[in-house]
Image (cartoon, rainbow, N blue to C red; front, side, top):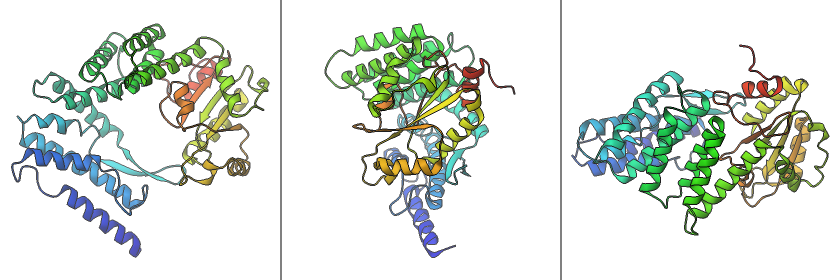
Length: 394
């Protein structure tokens, strides 16, 4: 092991030990113990340790273990203290993770699927208890509601809950109302509405339209967060319009990035995957290469949108169009890559009711944006249904 790596690992170990030193309850001071746990939870990286390095990933593993162990110890030591609920919401993620090597050669900390599922089942049951507890703080209730909405909205979309329409969806809508009642000026409302809208659009578009109209009518002022909520709602309504009818607004939007992008004949009667991601995001461009190889002959086309990153520290291929084009030429990708110059990288995906990068849209053979189907989030399933009208054979 090199001296530099030994030094980094020593620094990581020392910092982690200092951060989590001392057993819960040693000084019988729950406020101090909670403050130490919150500090550990909020710490995302260490000075002089490169994110994604072996030393950083080892520290992340240690952080999860320490947070989990000390959090459960706090709850056991102070079973009647109201802060136990504030500690509980710090423990959403499982204790043990693995460092895995991804296809592009990078490494990441990833959960163990079985252990993760078991912990989540136990954990989210405890959040129900939190919401019923009279001594839980407003902050703990808000965080619990956020986590429940995030988790179960995705669970419906992924098809991992039974009978969602008559079971979890009414609860989700009640949780949204409860969160708004607790904090009607929260900056999280727009994002929470968006997550629920995505779930409803996949499950029940009529109910989704009603939900969006209700939320827009609830946020009519110019006070924060009402303008943001209205913008998010209108963006998602745009997405739904282009699902209900040919996606002419989408093609017009793409022409704004490249006025020469006028010939749509190569995409007529095809399934088109719109991928919004930087050209050097290898772990995701490798997925595009695989999808193109597997499905192009069956009628798949890809359009990639490379966003202009205004951060001076970003790689050159994200900051300079010529560098981006050289990179694409070296890769010899057969699909069209557009260069998107916007005020911020989130403009495209936000405009289409999405909430993260990379962002994807699928245009079906009928020219409409393809609606998600619960349980069919994997690309092999989604594209097979659009191309062949059914899921791939198992």
